[in-house]
Length: 364
Image (cartoon, rainbow, N blue to C red; front, top):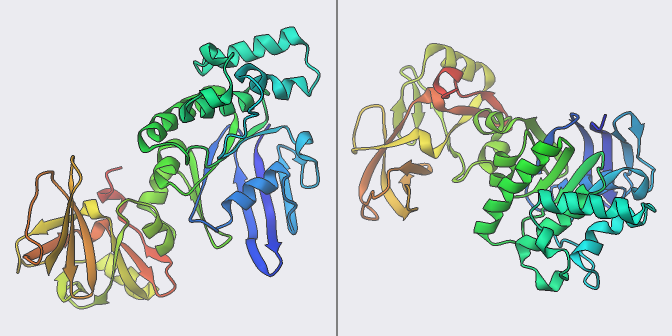
């Protein structure tokens, strides 16, 4: 068993609280992404699991072992760093072999394991080279190989793709996902890039200011965010959020009235809802002055190649609309926007999601 558990883990650096009572369980063989903005505590959590930092309070377990006070070498984990951390004076072969050598493994065993891992990652032709002779993507593969060769209980990856260009990041995302799936090793992956988290992970843990906000599969994080922070942090472009008031015929948003079913209206009123959130792909551009729509003006149009993003300014804010490729409109021109309120999330004044997107409309 290599399940990972954080129980009430806290970490302070002087007066700064980096982690606040973190309770997080990563199932055996799962791939979990720790996602959040810079300074949210995700790397601190990873370093505590690796044994590079001691928690101020709480307990960390791998399987049924309490590893809170164990030295890093005794935890049976392998870590892949953002900087790759390859030894420049060693060949690729020696870099990969190093974790085996310090465990006094015989040369014949080392060679077999290194050769097998190199074949898996398709880097066998690089074994005689030095790190300075490699591209960024090749160095990343070497760092992965060095972690894999140990057969650890868990992989820890700290933003391993952040130094790569956009195209190579996309390629390596797929490679790491495929690799972790085939190995079946419990993996914790730290990133601030939501595309990495949503496309690679079985579970996503969203953090903010040292506090865990939500843990769920990627689709649930996207469609059923626990609060306004998760809703607006996850998604590119982010969810549109506008203040809302409730009337007899529906909801009043930005000077317009949108229809709302009786059951959702009752739930919103009971929960004290103050804001409505809608994803850009669930908003439709319509002609101005249409019933059940909001009036505004085009703020900016952003062609993206396969689609177009249109930013529409309404009386209480702006909404981003994801629409078809080739769409054009003059800045400042009148526009209408509409959306089905079954596809919306509703938040209270504290930012908690009180009424979620209706599953029947969610494309599930």
